[in-house]
Image (cartoon, rainbow, N blue to C red):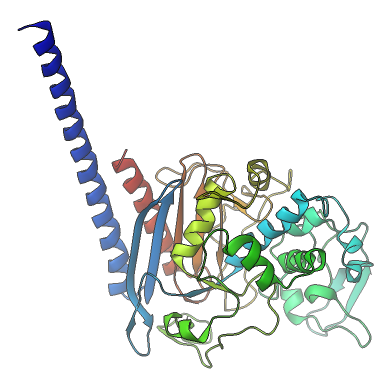
Amino acid sequence: MTRKTAGIAFAAGAVFAAMIMTGAANTQTSSATAILDASLRAAVERKDVPGVVALVTDRERVLYQGAFGVADVATGRPLASDALFRIASMTKPVASVALMQLVEQGRLGLDDPAEKYLPELGGLKVLESFDAASGAYRVRPASRSATVRHFLAHTSGLAYPFTSAAWRDFKPRAGESYPFGGPLLFDPGERWHYSTSTDVVGRLVEVLSGRKLEDYFRQHIFAPLKMDDTSYNVPEAKGPRLVAQQQRAGERMDGAIELQRPQPGLTLAAPVGGGGLASTASDYGRFVRMLLNGGALDGARVLKAETVGLMGQNHIGALSVPALKSALPRSADFTFIADGRDKWGLGFLITVDRVPGKRSPGSLSWGGINNTFFWIDPYRGIAGVIMMQYLPFADAKALAVLDTFERGTYQLVSGGR
């Protein structure tokens, strides 16, 4: 054999070997996709959840998307991949990105007192004592002002009625008012507590930009990212694509899943930064892919890469994120949090633990009260979005579907590489 023919034979062999390897990888990917499909479909068939849409993306493209079950348990309307979900607190990362755009422009600083821009936050009071039986309470002035960073990181001292029994039962005396829901549970910066803090973030965006949130988000985030199906107010023509609001039956929300009555309308009277958006898995997939790519997608830059990096850093220091007990049936306990070990950035939960088969340490995530969830894994370069639509939040069966989806995602990604 001549040197030339030997070279040709070697090249042909290399191509053939590459084809075999590519074929094997494609076979593994197809198998992992089929397993993921089967796992999600089985959860619906067992009636663990009424329906689910799931999406996996890397930095370049969507790797997986599936839709299973029904959009309405009362009518049996099939759930489509372009279904619109009320994503509730998955609005929070969007509002956080919006505020960080203004931080980039020098309109405010992270350590500025928020009352500098929102005077109603001046003179905040801390709940010093509360008697659940009588409703009697004592408040004192906060020892320090709450900063912009405190509100982005949920260390402001605010709460939600479903994350605090005191907030749930608190009734202010005549003449007293408490902006954004109630008195502080603690001095700003002392603890982490999930709260209406991102409503403050949204209000800061409105005041500093001079625009309503719907308009600001559309111009500066949704239009550049081609998130055409994401909005607070759902156009009437898109109403048939909206998934019905559902819940587990019973006083403790532990029965079969049924329709909520009445159903919410298509519009919101007063959108806030902490919740309220409707979106699709595809649209939110574009949002998380932008973050995977350091703030840019398809030639449109929404944030600087260094800003995205900053948002993913620990901004609560030695504090930790606790697995909160729920104070209302509409949410189960926050068992999806690694109690006392997870951290919080500027708009995101930060995973600290390494769990085999799941997201990497340093991954960012959160969810919405109707059991919509996402995570962003910068180390592996992938992100997942999964959307269901029923209460209670953090329902054990919904979390099991999330776990199945996440583990299936990493099998999919590993099988294709």
